[in-house]
Image 1 (cartoon, rainbow, N blue to C red):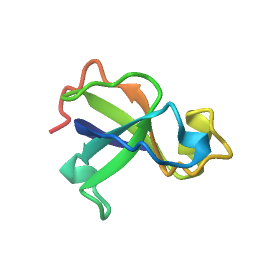
Image 2 (cartoon, rainbow, N blue to C red):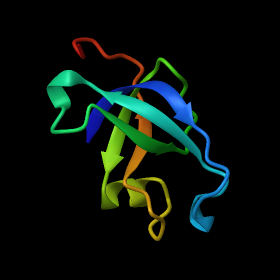
Image 3 (cartoon, rainbow, N blue to C red):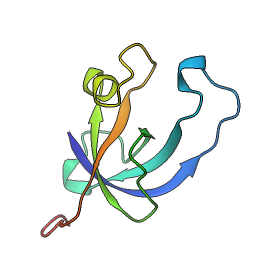
Image 4 (tube, helix red, strand yellow):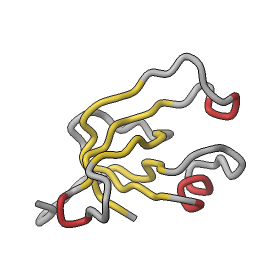
Amino acid sequence: MLIGKVVGSVVSTRKCENLIGNKFMIVDVLEHMQSGAKQLIAIDKIGAGIGEYVLVAQGSAARVGSGMPDSPVDAAIVGIIDDGTGLE
């Protein structure tokens, strides 16, 4: 699981049928948690907003955590951080 900050959103009118009705957010991964990508696109089923710190699951955990086990999802916002003392 990673921690990141939501910095934007992505709008896609044409997408896989399993993804219709979902929101996609751009997440900046915190520097000390990066293992390659500095940003990622994550499906957001919990209503995170721009500027919020979030928990992001990847891979099969993202699909299960977002309740979409048969969808093409690689990253999902699974929590909004209320208190992030010491994050940066």
